[in-house]
Length: 208
Image: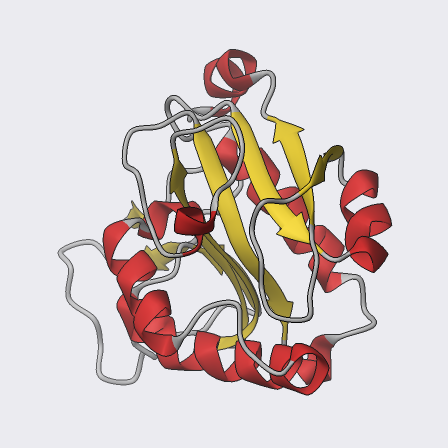
């Protein structure tokens, strides 16, 4: 007998196996960690998320995009707008998003989640230091954008980034919307937008 754990085509399903009757012999291993797994994050992942974020950003900009309390808040309110990449049970990369209800991002978007909206604000994409320079950021972003096609009602993804990161997001299909209204001391940002197309096709052909 197999029990499906995940239904999304972009959060790859994995299965647990049990013999007929549901009895597991003592000699059989109860849990086997998948070599590579993509899944939504939970509040239990918050500390691992924050440790990766802190190491990646503090040395560059002097502060994290999200505090630990904000990470916990978003993973409690909208875990479906996050995505983590785990290898052998360890978090190696993640994205955290929240809902936003206006055409452009504003300062309040940094800390708010607006439910049941057509846009997701991508707060942070970060990769563990031991997993960088391997293309994992690009792969995770692609998986996340494909996954968003299966989230009912979403039509746009928005983010802000520094100028040197604009080409990275353009390669993923984002378009520049101009200078962002969001401000952080000593930093300026460009706002980027991605149109989530083909949602109906994705749901019809992949079981979303």
